[in-house]
Length: 116
Length: 112
Image 1 (cartoon, rainbow over the protein chains, first blue to last red):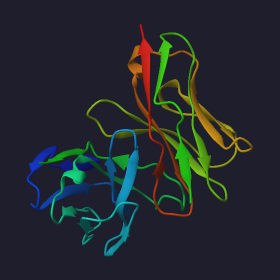
Image 2 (image 1 turned 30 degrees about the vertical axis):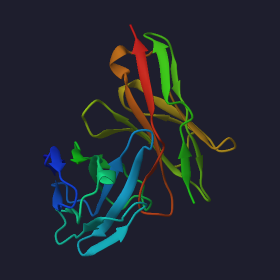
Image 3 (image 1 turned 90 degrees about the vertical axis):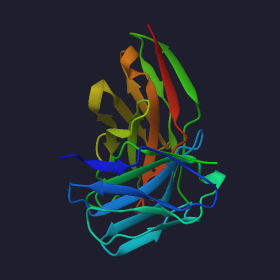
Image 4 (image 1 turned 45 degrees about the vertical axis):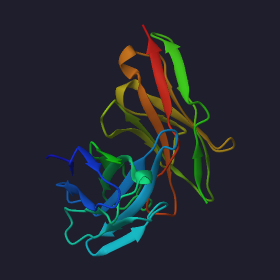
């Protein structure tokens, strides 16, 4: 098992560009989520999904889109990058959904994004 | 609204000494509480969780945490710190919403 795989590991974007951060898991987990990590602020939830075809917003969804067409993949799209989106992005998966049975989440290794 | 507070940005401890990393939470109802560790340039790794039952929870790498409902705390502890324990530690809460709410993190520095 590879666990949770994120690509790319590093990315530099110009303001206004768009891009997609990829996340894939091979554990057949129903629940997947995206967080951003900023110094002194912990991890903040961007979007999450409790299964294929179902997504919902987290704390900081503005400027980001997601879709969940398969159980394995949960891409995060930046529509028009801004310097405020410079951050480290983490994808996580778990099963069953956190809060229902409180299983631990598995995290990818992160994508470090810089917007100039 | 639920929240998690980690009041110390950094904790310094000498190798071999006991360590405590503090966490307090705020939530209505019974919480599910977690501790995660992050090593440099890595993702988060699960250490332990409290769901219900014994207030003292044992986890990976010799870590344990004590749940205190009256003080709404979930402090992480280890009897004897190792230099290799140096990392960033996050307390997290899950209740109601289908997501984790994280504290701001505490950097643990263990000196040889």
